[in-house]
Amino acid sequence: MKPATLVYINSNDEKEIHKLLQAIEEKREQVEELTVSVENLKAEVDLFQHRYNAHIGRYYLELDKVELEAKEYRLRLQLRREDVSEEEIEARVESCFRENRTRIDACEAQKEDAQESQKNELPDKEVKFLQNLYRKLAKRFHPDKAEHPDEQNRREQLMPLINRAYHEQDVEILKRLSIGETDIEIDSEHTTAEKRERLQSELRSLNRVTAELRSEINRVKAGRTYRLKEQVETAEKNGNDLLTTLAADLKRKVQSGHAQLTRLINMWRRSKNS
Image (tube, rainbow, N blue to C red; front, top):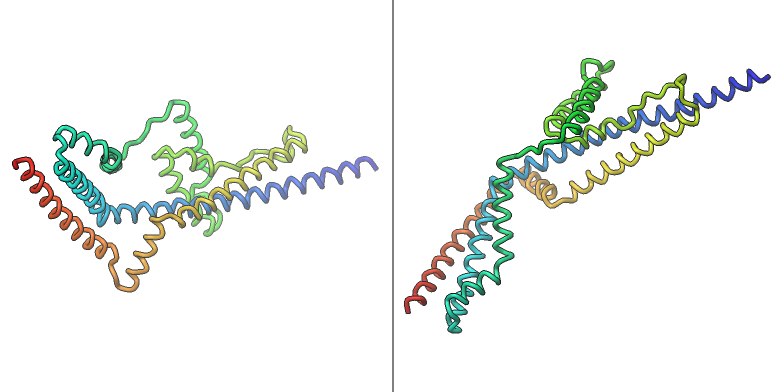
C-alpha cells in the first residue's frame, strides 16, 4: 500500500505546482499587457506634451517673465515715491521676487535640458545586468518564435518596448518583464516545499507588479496633461482647434504685457531723470 500512497501524494503535489505554474503564466501575461498599456499611455502623454509646448508652453513662460518684470517695475516706482535710495530699491526688488525669478530660471533651464536629452551612464556591473536581461527577454519574446497569431501579435508589441528600454537603459521595465520566469521543474533537485515556496513568492511578486501597473495607469489618466489631452481631442472631434485658440489668447496677453511693461520702464526712466 505504501507505493500507492506515495504516488497519490506526489500526484497532488504535482497538481498544486502545476496550478501555481499556470497562475504565474496567466499573471505574467497580465504584466506584459499592462506594461504595454502603461508605456503606450506615457508615450501618448509625452507626444501631447511636446505638441502642447510647441503651441502654448513658450507663451506661458514668456507671460510669466513679462508679468514678473512688470511687478518689479511697479515696486521700483512705489519705492521711488517713498524716497527710497536706488541701491535700497534694487535690494528690495531682488529680495521680494527672488523665488519667482528662481522658478522662471529653473523652467528655462529645464527646457534646455530636455532639448539636449542626456543619457546617464550606468556602472559596468549594471550594464552587464542590463545586457543579460535584454538578451533573455529578446530570446523569449522574439516574434518569429510565436506558435499562434495572437502570441505573435503580443510579442510584436513587446519587442519594440524591450528594445527601447534597453537603449534608454530603463532597467525597471526589463526587470518587470522578467518576473515570474522560473526554471523550476517537477523532477529537479528541489524539494516539493522549496518549489512551492519559490513559485508562491514569484506569484506574489507578479500580483504586486500588476497592482502597481494599474495604479500607474490610474495616476497617468488622473494627471493634468492627460485630462487636457482628452479635452483637446474631444474639441478636435467637434471641429475646434483648442490649442490654437489657447495659443492666440496667450499671445494677445503676452503682447499686452509687453506694452504695459514698456510703459512702466519709461515711467521708471523718467523718475530717475526728474
